[in-house]
Length: 430
Image (tube, rainbow, N blue to C red):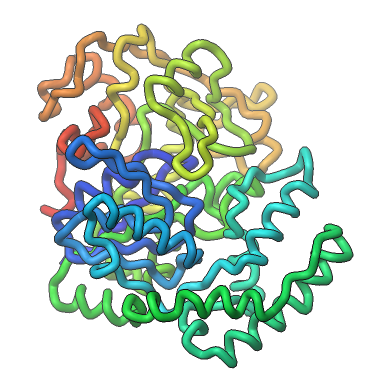
């Protein structure tokens, strides 16, 4: 039995899809425990690039059953569009996918409210994707949310939508000067998916725990990342769920005592999308270089990612918060040939050195990186298959990051392909 959690260690877009895809072919279930269609993954299989938004990356692993867990918020229209797109390319998606009956649903009014609220905030906007994720989670916590199981009880569905719109229409009309949304329109919207949705719905908590009891392997693929966690991230510039390791347990129904490995995914440099503080952010030619060579464009939004050097303060923090057993370092090849590579080892906040994350949001906003530098390598590393095959300077860089980051680096990505990964320690062999 193995229950492995995959968690992003920065602000997302670290390459979790690749890690899930590599391990997913060797496990029985791949579960997405949080987020919605705001958390995209790019996976390259056989030279083909797949951009996944709501579906777990395990959907491309033929040996694994993909599961949308109870902690996910599901836009049904986006779900079936994504399934259709994959099946048009020959992937077997809908026959294997399982959806938790307890997962919450993104309603059309959630998306409307998300967009108008961001516009209302103006310069104070969070930089959401506008896909209704935050309002859906807000309704979940307020206990007025819609769940997958409600689609199969029309009376309950109508009651819940009517209750929600009693308040939301007041906001739309009186606060945002928008048109009210009709209850029956939303009811019909959800009922239109019922026939196609029904074969996918399961008691996912029972399914996954039974699988573990039978000695099978389960991989939990977290969306977003640690620094976007609503509790542990750079609040308020965060997502609306807990994409840390603890959240994976809650969002899958798998208890923490069953977790055997926790794998943090971290880039050899740092990126983030949207607003919020970013100590190592670059505004020079090297930021542009990382953006262009690394292909740093958001899967969901098409927005260019902000780029900066590796931040070991964040890496140590993520290791501590998640209890990482291993790191998967991605995109090492992007640093080839850049001369010297700065590594952030601490922060300077108004003359005071911080070797760990500052306590307050204000301090983090004012944090300036303290760098040490290491020489880069010029050799092409995209064909390296073992750690010893890497150039000495590349090995030294990895070992220094390992020393600074509070966790062993067990996997190293040297290119976008499935086979372009160096394995130093196999978590499935633990």
